[in-house]
Length: 114
Length: 115
Image (cartoon, rainbow over all chains, first blue to last red; front, side, top):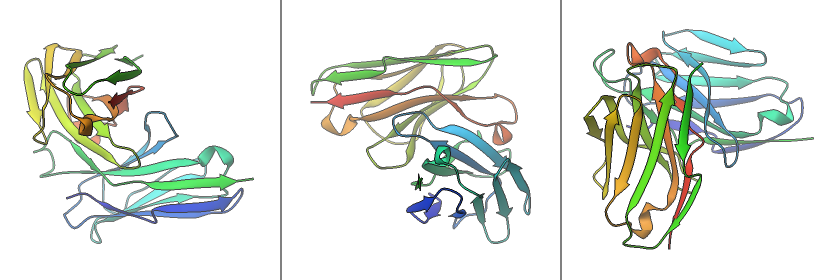
């Protein structure tokens, strides 16, 4: 089951905040977040492995609510370099029973304007 | 450090022609290897994954195939391309052990246009 991301697209001014959500109809064991700039390969941002876990790097952070089967990515004080498409990937199957193969959402296109 | 190489970067092929895309990983052993496809404006679709030499799992039925002749080499092939095979093909690797907590590392991709 493909996770559902929302919103599909968002336009920000530099310095504004954004939240991108990723939800699944199946139990989540881990959530990955990646950013892809136009014409380039996706780049890993972070993995969340436990329910309630939160991680952050500079002004980009994420949370994982295992009970709600969802994760959110928070972009604070956005910069022009944050522009791109953000994908969440969720682990399928039983923890440790799959190959760790990810199913990705359709992505959220983030555009940061000066 | 680990690196992943994927080639060619772009490819234009006529319908019905064969396809071979190659991916190699350096600096790691026994990686899990993956082929993803990204159609224009769409998400990442897993095509094949491999946990070892000669071990290939297919995620979607299609006219593509994959092979892993060496530990760090992954090849995507087709005998006859279809128009619907156009897209951005990405090779990726992750650590072979405990892969559920290992990030995917993507190659730079191959943009395939079937005409």
